[in-house]
Picture 1 (cartoon, rainbow, N blue to C red):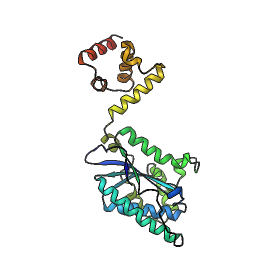
Picture 2 (picture 1 turned 180 degrees about the vertical axis):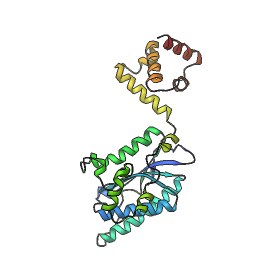
Picture 3 (picture 1 turned 60 degrees about the horizontal axis):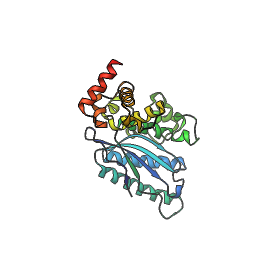
Picture 4 (picture 1 turned 90 degrees about the vertical axis):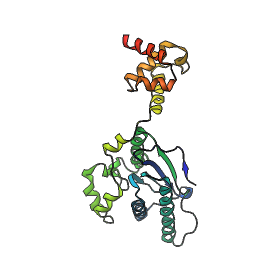
Length: 257
């Protein structure tokens, strides 16, 4: 079953998704290097066919993460269905006629709807082998896209892995870690305000309710959101549903100090 927790924010007619596949019962379906290579090859082939870009990936022993850019969720669903079906047949064949399901679900997908989430998703994907204590540094893990983001490691990785050609590697990860991708993703203001409130409450060590019952605290919060979190007054007013007159009074007090 495909699970999409949130609707994707459309950015230049494109959508970004964090896709996760996992072995059934947490089975190590990618334990061997040839398994990881095979799954990556299938993903690359089908993504190219449906014009889906792989922006980041990490293949662990029992699961894999991909950050994908697709215009159509229907195409993404089709690609994952075909890839997982082909890999399941390959895996069962390689396991001397093993039968039954290989994946826990077809795939899980989370829509990326903010610049912050996009960047954090890339970091999260690349940190998987470090958090699992497989390697000490991201660049030491062979089956992730991290070293594509560090171009000086590309030649060494190509020498170590003879299965892929240079063009294969370039196709697998398209437009990675480029500023234009980050800039194209609009910051989710609502998430930014919520994050700012959490930081303010923790910093001031106050009860959240006091913000709405104490004008002085509300002014301090607005000042914090404006000066520290770089959120515009208009966005703050719209988030809290503050009247224009009240907001003008608050901003005037902030200016006077």
